[in-house]
Length: 295
Image (cartoon, rainbow, N blue to C red):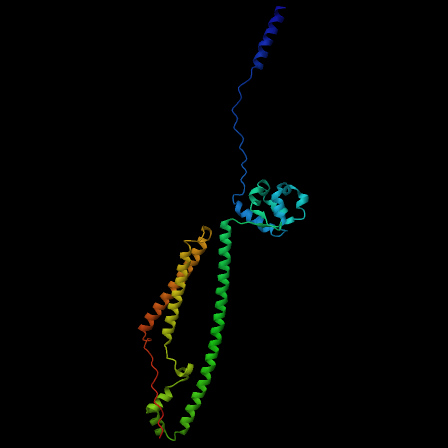
């Protein structure tokens, strides 16, 4: 009995040691999975707007009233593009208020997209710039066509006058009997003025003053430079009152206009300096014409 009692006591002591809870080992926490959502929510909302434009106007408003429809494939089955977009962007389903908040209802129960003031300003400036670009292109094409037509008309007029001038010279030369008479006629004031007169002097009724080609190029460059420089300064001045979303675009157009203006003005100054150095700026005066003597 004594041996059995000792064995039982030892068994109870061992069981008590086993039953004592051991201190938990320090465990490293499992890394948490961080879901990074699309940070550019505005771009996603704009893309959703483009998708919704393909479907009836009431769809967006219905989805705004009942966002649970975004999770029903049966309801989205007739709209496959929208269904694919929602599958690609699940954040729309999680936050429908943000993506459908700007859709409202008109009096005729049809919805439309109600943009923010910033988006309205961007749309306004975009439409204005598109209209200005179209007008500038139209005026450029019209100016080019007008210049081509004017050049053709002036060339034909000059050709007719040159032909008449050549015929008159031939008739005068045929009437001169000898070389001495021709030499005397050429050396006379009337003959010299008649032979030196060309068709270019008789354009526009014969009263047009002759202007050297360098002057024309210099004036055109200077005028274009002033116009483009003023346009660029105008774009830069508009930056003061324009919204922040279009400042970068207006700044870009302003720099382009100023660069073109400064380039044209520099071209005019360079052309003036080169023409002055090469002696091309001598004022040409038309020769004096003496009235024919009636003998």
